[in-house]
Image 1 (tube, rainbow, N blue to C red):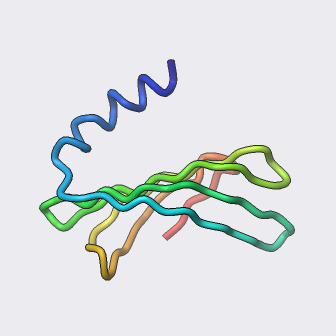
Image 2 (tube, helix red, strand yellow):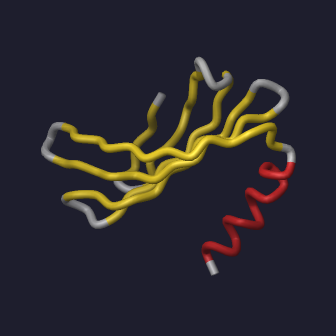
Image 3 (cartoon, rainbow, N blue to C red):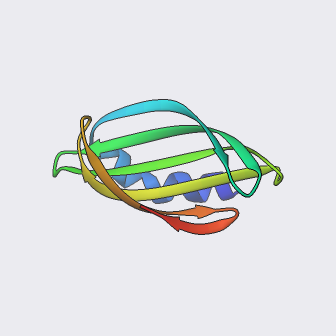
Length: 90
């Protein structure tokens, strides 16, 4: 049900997208923790973008983050929130 709600929420945004980029990311941080995320960045015609990721993490089991920003394939500035553990990022 949550996946359906997220799909319905982001569907209008995806229709207006100029192009998308899929990627994988590994994070290692201090205090000790690590995550492996699968992500997608959606670029829009008005020079904005939506970036979201989800994956596995240690010591928590899973994590996800979503951000919105300005830029293109070469340079972007994104403001977002990591959903678990909760924190903001730039």
